[in-house]
Image 1 (cartoon, rainbow, N blue to C red):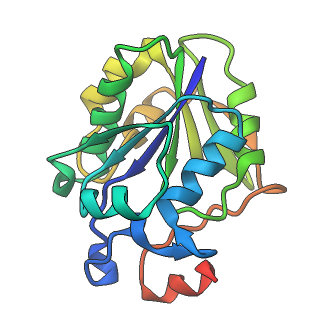
Image 2 (cartoon, rainbow, N blue to C red):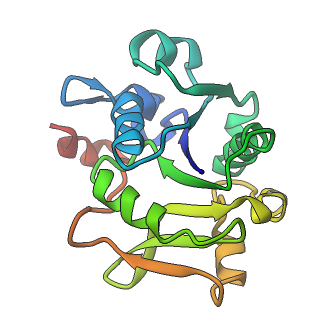
Image 3 (cartoon, rainbow, N blue to C red):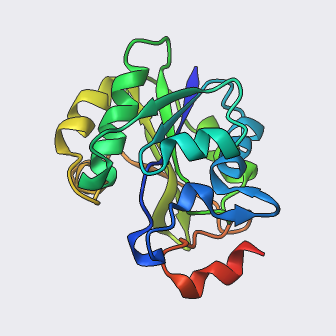
Length: 193
């Protein structure tokens, strides 16, 4: 079983301290949108990692039916949230975690489903590609979680691990079904209309 892992803990420093999970997208918070994408893409179990404004995200976003972990170390960057999420999934029957970032609303269920369907084992390592370049979502087989967590520091997440294991990484082209942009600064907010 492939579990969705939604990383939604960041404080939105480059957005003036507006947590990305709370940004409005089509009338709902981005965290709720991303959760729906994971479910529609075939992830029946979803683990959400919150951090900044966690109580407000829980209050405003419909996270019904998912497990929520609050990362008290969210200020340390995405790596700490990835560690928290993988740690929360470690005690489940998940064979893999499909990692989606809350600030990429251009990634839809089709990309999630493609990456998910490419998982062949608990040692799987799969990523969406956009024009041949690695992007999100990224699928990490359960047999790799401990090693990924050990290398996940700062805002790099699993980048160094994926680079070191590129020979095992399966890239699945998704540019025909998704756009891999991030909502990082004020100029990106127009994409949330």
